[in-house]
Structure formats: structure tokens, C-alpha cells
Image (cartoon, rainbow, N blue to C red; front, side):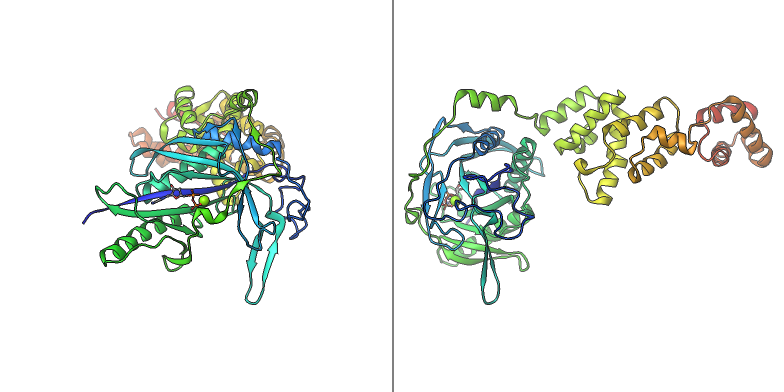
Length: 475
Ligand code: ADP
Ligand code: MG
């Protein structure tokens, strides 16, 4: 019998606002001592009332537009009731009956090149809980994360396999990253994903019973867990059993999922409208204002870079992957008017240093103006590309401009014909054999003589002038 798999993903994205969702507590809670970044609202003290942070709504709208969703002008908050120490109010404020965004459509392309459209059923704004840390004999609670703003992004059960799930997550992450409303980092916990998986016989209309897998720490883990669940569920059915609806945990080390708890029905959360918050009203003006600030996404940027700067696709892809790097490139080009050389320098030297230092472009100490100045020095022939690389290394160590370094260290290219001639004569005098070889038409001798000349000038001689003069003198 042939089976097909059906997958729905729930993704939580933490928004990078300045303050938390209901109160003035700072959202930069991570570096702070446990339980210092809180207000009575974050810990759910009786009588402490929530008020929606306006910026959360702006960020949420931006993310929803980036994911191709429709925005509801009127939506509501609801209470999801459950008992757990990480939420002492005994409920989580979320959006259940009417979320602020629905019906998203997102085009994705798998690694093997298959294109499809993923539908997002809904996005709801909700609050995060405290973080529990379970030790061997006690559990600790850190409320710094409590009341952080979250979006829960839920797809319909439209994803066909792990490859498509992976492509969806990659696209979602990239698009949200471009809006700058979240770091969307699984490592830092600002992106979390649960995978719902079921299988059914091909031709069957009714969906099979699903399991929900949590504890997924990377997109690769999501894909592996989905594949594992598909095989496991098929095996259960083939052996005459039935798949049980439950929550499972991914065990990365052993590459398996394990039962965590049987899934409560949605009814058990006893959702009801949140009485402490007014309806969420999104005006046309607000929506328009946010629409105007929507970024150009990487796909669009890629096409524009190829057209506007004449950069080949293979180079335009890494350049447009991260919005910050793309901005950096465009700022350099504004100052150099040389897209080709700017692109080369960024993709080779700049990316190499970022990798070595394990930092991102925003933390890179050579800003656009200094790199552009260096490129301009190459283009106006003040320095050779080889010397430029030496200067680049020195620029990393200091905040001197390339011009200052050239001046201080006497690195300007030698273009004075008298000096070049003296240099070439010296090389010819000391390398009689190679000169004879060159005269006999052996091209390799030219390379050697050039090397000698460059060495003698400590890399400062203008290579074109040297080549021309050697050829002239060894006719
Ligand atoms: P819950 O409260 O159980 O988390 P949600 O509505 O938040 O429910 O999420 C349900 C997720 O499960 C959605 O992404 C949905 O597409 C997916 N899903 C629902 N039924 C199935 C099924 N039979 N097989 C696979 N995925 C499913
Ligand atoms: Mg859910």
C-alpha cells in the first residue's frame, strides 16, 4: 500500500521590540540577571493589567505582510487556560476566535528545485511564558522571558514532505529577517517550530491522526523528525495498529521521537475572550504606513542586483542573502561607482574576515567609507591590488583611513617612469639567463622577471608599466 504524508507547522517568532507586550519592562532580557527584567504584569500579580504595546502591533503587521497574509481590521485577544508554573496567571493571552492575520500564501522552492505554495492559516499575537529550568531535585523559574511578544504562525496541513517543510522554514526566516522585526534565530530561541505529522493511504480524502513533535533545535532537526515520524506512523498502521494523537519530543542524539504527553483537545483550554484588553483595531492609515516601509525581499533584490549592477547570479545570491550585507554593498558602490570590484572585495576579503572573526557585517569595523576609499585608490592607480590587500589587513587592526596608511608607510604605487626604468634595468642586469629565454620567446621567463621586479619594489611598482618596459627592452 502507498502512503502519503501530511504536515502542518506551528512556528513561534519572538518580536524584537524595545519593551515587552503588555508593560514597560525591557525586552532585552537575555543578558540580565534572572527575574530582574519584570513588572507585576509579567509575573501575573493579581490586579496587574495588560496594555498592548503599539510597537508589537506594528511589527506583527509587518511580519504578516511579509508572509503574504490578509490583515483583519478587527481582531481580539483570548485566554487559553491551563495550569503550569511558567504562567502563574494560569492562562496565556493569545488570539483564538479571530486572529489579526489569516490566509497567507508563501511561494517556496526546495533544494531540488521543486516550487510550491504554502498556505498560512493564521498568525496570532500572544505572550511568551517564563523559562523553567529543571535540575535533578528542583526546578527554577526565570520570568525575564515572560510577556515577551510572540507571533504564532500556523500553516494549513498542506506541506507534503520534509524537504518542503525545510524550504518553508528557510523562506519564512529569510522574509521575517528582512523586515527586521525579529532575529529569527533558533539558536537564541527567537524562532521555535513544532511539527504536526500524519500519514494516509494515497487516494484517502480524510486526514490521518496527527502527532505534534516539539524540541526541534534546527531546521535540519525538523526535517529529520518529520521523516522519522512518517516511517514510524506507516509502520504502526502496517502492523495493524493505530496512530495515537499525542505530543512527542525529538531526541536529537538518538534520532527518534518519543511520547511526551497525550494531546489535550482544543476544548480543554476553555478559550474565552480576554476581558482585560480591548479589541485590536487596525486602521487603513496604519496599514498603509506600514506597507510603505516594507523592505525589498531577497528574491527581488537578487533580480535588481543582476540587472542594475550587472552582477552574475552566483555572486548576487550571497550578496543579497542578508539585508545588512546587501545594504553594505550598495553603500560602497555609491562611493566607488564600481559594482564589480566592490562585489569582489566584499565576497572575498570582507566575508573571509567576518568568518574568521565569527561576526556579522554590522559589527565589522571597516565601514563602507573606508572600503570605498581603498577601492578608489586601486582604481586611480595609487596602489596595486596586492598592496591593497596589505592595507586592508592594517585597516582591520586600526581605524586609519587607507589614504593615511599609504602616506604613513609609503605604499603608493611607483608610476614614475624614471624609477621604473631603474628598477627594470636592475632586474635585467641580474637575470641574464631569463632575459635570453624571453628573447627566445619563452613566456614563462616574463613571469619570472616580473616577479623579480615586483619583489625589488616591495610590490609597489605599477605592474603594467613594468611589463611594458621589460618587453620593450628585451625585444
Ligand atoms: P494545536 O492547538 O493543537 O497546536 P493548532 O491549530 O495550533 O492546534 O495547530 C494545528 C497544526 O496542525 C496546524 O499547523 C495544522 O495544519 C496541523 N494539522 C492539523 N491536522 C493535521 C493532520 N491531520 N495532519 C498533519 N497536520 C495537521
Ligand atoms: Mg498551537
